[in-house]
Length: 350
Image 1: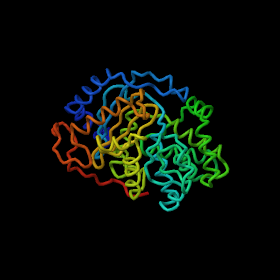
Image 2 (image 1 turned 90 degrees about the vertical axis):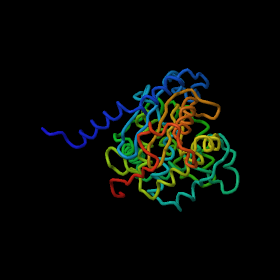
Image 3 (image 1 turned 90 degrees about the horizontal axis):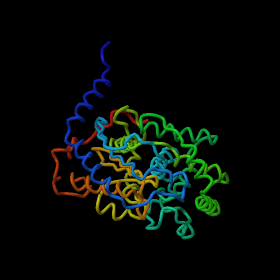
Image 4 (image 1 turned 60 degrees about the vertical axis):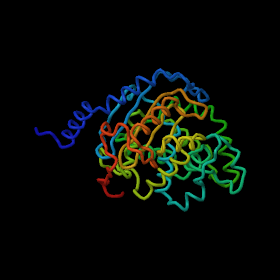
């Protein structure tokens, strides 16, 4: 039996990965930064406190063909948490369009902690952006579906298009979030008071807790980032995960608001669209070139992975990835995807 083209492509990608100096670079970074002991594992959600602080994975996937480079614990599952927010925002945009979504959630950075409720009581009472909890809860309420089960299945199917397989919800983490999510419940009722949520507040919260409890790996996050880098098309499956017109919306909001109240410093140092989560994931997009992901549970005071921030900062600086950078990268020959690469999506808009 002849090999299928996809099998041959996977074999070629595997050979190229094995001999690439970029693979050695990721291994070197993983070895060096694993000794970085700063930060602490999140414990305000009890299930998250069970994570091993030594877990540490780095994965990078090419936007052109999904070629994957990885080092460390890249197959270790963890819950996606806030990294889910831009993707759910994207589905809400597809369901309703920009104008309707903008009526419920803005796009301005807050400078406050991700779970702050202070600015909800100002002005329009509309959450400032979909990356803070208030905005993410308002966004979850916009997902179409006749029942809660239908809405959840639409979310899981959507994430499946980005990843290349349909993910599952970690029931233990979901139950833990639901039991201890009093602050999010307060945020939701405040939104209801201001007319920003429908009356079925508990259903909306359940959907939000479930989206945060979806299980992923570092490899999955790299592929999700590579899909955004590829104009919304999964570079391995060729399936469109997001309408092309909304890719810029996600990347823009990730750039300005994706790293909690560290977003400004991140934009200055790293200069790439990104999103972090309190389970220790950091997902970064290099448009037209690649998606990067790091997983390491210990967090800094902003709620971002300490090792994740350090690795992404070094990758950006070493390879000249900053979106406003003009200096040539120090290790340009190592990077499998040249700076001039521009990807043409292989599948038509859905």
